[in-house]
Image (cartoon, rainbow, N blue to C red; front, top):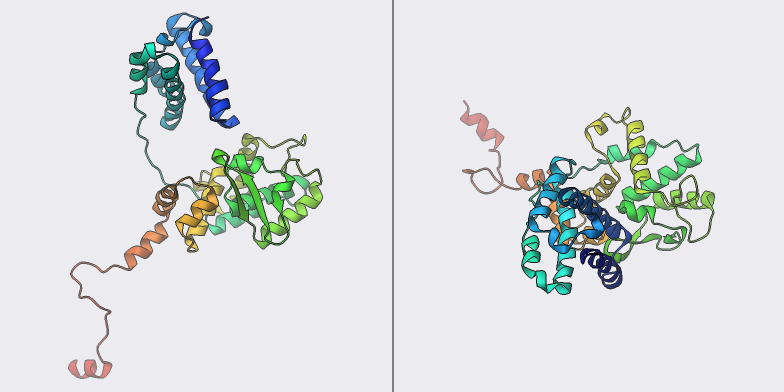
Length: 330
């Protein structure tokens, strides 16, 4: 067995799990990245993954792997950069374990991420959100579950992993009604609930039953919904709402779109970006500022309405006296 196999094992068990206490999502993403890399290296070196040495993963092979992701697997630039982040994390760890390979490690760490195009976020207007909430058939148990889930997502802006991870005890419907979740980076936060969400969740909890630790929104087998299940749920109800709200055809609606819709709704109603950042669980308020202010055309139109065109006299325009204007027109 080469030095790469024990290095990878130590990276996952000691660095990711033991030292950083990485989430299951991070561990799964890194696992997938290295499975792809090792299979690619096997095809190019002819050696099985357990026979590969650290020096086999040089900068040339890593660069070819990243190009392979984009050109042959059709991965986006963001996905390519995410795979590179996993690789760089391993090589930072390798720098401590194998200083004899410092030069090769530094060449890999010098591979830069690709710049990505920043596109405007997709969000639902109030009319589109209302149409989406009206789409589930609330005469069925699944429809009532879906309606409560969509309403909670639109009101709280929870990430899809936060939504699926909610348990029955996470919802408090007494004085100061709120939902409690553990979000990205293991940060716990609470989000208040309005009257409509409280009523929908109270009715759903009464129907749902179950223990405090059971999933709030279970699947058919009673287990936690998967991310794909929530995505399909949103797509299904968007399609059902489109006849009543044709503008939805132009929206690529995903579960994350509901999060963006919550943020834009808060922003349009005058909530400051620092509060929105806390509401959404953003690490940096600049994320909120750059993403959502940039996307809101209405705020830009309001800003330009406060300015004056070049060459105009300062002050407010006042029309002349009507009597004098009549006399002067004679």
